[in-house]
Length: 212
Image (cartoon, rainbow, N blue to C red; front, side, top):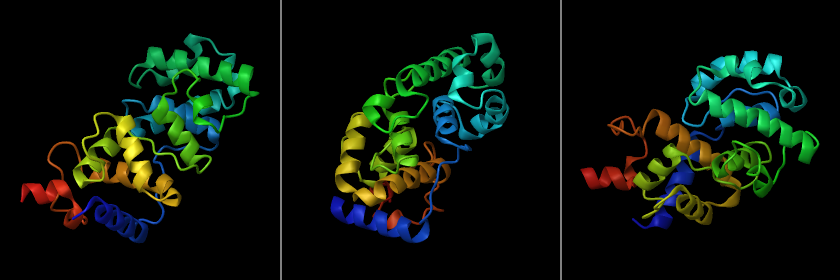
């Protein structure tokens, strides 16, 4: 099976069986999503969703967060991984939003990555989810699943994986494909002992075919 065939079957399957795919982070506006994605680095969405309601109640806008002190924010996210750094990032991000972007969330990746706590993956999530741009955010799930399926080949890092995926997935499907890959990796194609017996796409999975 060629790589082109794998991409075709991947898109056909998920567009038919999962036409609506969204982030599992809970948010009410672009600012809240940005905060949530920053907090989600090396942390589960479930844990993030547990702490953000109270955080957003106290700091509902970048204006409020930009004026906060470390000790005012930290208690709300102390159960999140790396709370010290993330507290600094959140306040710094809000300060820069107010100073350089008039409190608005930028829609360009090269502007988003200037914000404290925002790397390429986070920037791509915002551009994709909020602005529906054809950006592919590659996290550990996307990196793993795309390689196992055979959608990426010899990608040494997330940037190479992103480039291969964007090159081969039609633009209109890229925002959806990001969620398809994440959710499949989160619940079926898990890192250890993938649930191949439950998987519905083994017929075009390179990993499955190699292990049979």
